[in-house]
Length: 529
Image (cartoon, one colour):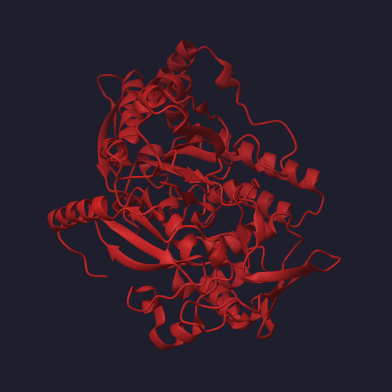
């Protein structure tokens, strides 16, 4: 991908916007989409801003309906063996790529093998570890990719064998890690298959343009099996980290949908655009990750002091103003397959003043006072709301003898730093890819790429492994609750609040259904004049 200087991109974006002003079409969606995608390859993406794009042009065996529930996608039907281990999918006869080539079983087999191949270095490969031998292949213990439990029975039949019965497996297949690759193209150009000059689609839209710093553009894929029911002709995904600027563009009519907004503008939106700002709970946690390889953060009492000194109750209502619920545990309330009490440490119910006093005592015991403070750098990706929280937390930590240097960068740079371990405290968030607690808990498992802080506890890992081999859902939940308590009691991370989805949707838009996953595929969206 050839990048252009930022100023040139901005100028082009402005010219482009003016052009759109005169050519607006009822079937053209203009969507604010946050940061620049790091990739559009389903095995190399990780963010929701990338998922919105990739999930429009690629589709798995299963896909999402308007409510983000799993429905048949490229598969016309499936069966499950009595022991719950073998899923057999029959592909649609009319499932074809946008260049007219049929979607075949080999496209899925090759995609899953590529996902698990250690050479691909796919960060999210572990999301498909329920598949037989997936973890062993991805970890390098098995080198023959053909040992993966995904087989081509015939050109239109895919068989997937699991390690254990997995209650959320169909939902996991909606994730981009389960999307196929066009092997007829991949065999010819390799990883370059996602370049604009090569790319093909099997989803409802086809990507046709990527102007870095400005936007990506999709058009309706006329070869999609349900193209007749796709209302939109074009979708523009605008790159815009600055939420204030994005809101201005929404107010001027440039955007039909905003996928986030400055929290301090919620009141304005409610008064001037009643009903357009949507704030709804969904399954995700906003958190700070502590680099546990850093000597400053290896003392559990220091980590505890940092965590208990944060007054979470003021963040949602006062600092953000959109009512996010304080988070003291790791698995969001409402997660499926998680019978039992929500994790709630005793300190969460303490008077905040008492907590600050305890945190200060812990820091003093570790050698840090107002005169000899602990100095930490807090990194966050550029965003008004992240900055607002970082400033507030820095002030709270000041009270316990911690000096904070704030450091922000654009989203791709930020997450590269987290993955590289180049941080002390880092802002992060996790939106559950499917509704099962293992999707949260795996994030703190030893060796998982997105375990940015390198938290590691052998007992924690063993409990998750045991839960994966447990068929009884209540017993399985009990094991996962034990694991969650271990990680939280060791302050492996600092959960801050449970997310709410914050979208702004123009009255012209139909088919945008609020849901717990905050996934809104444009296949279901329509726009009126």
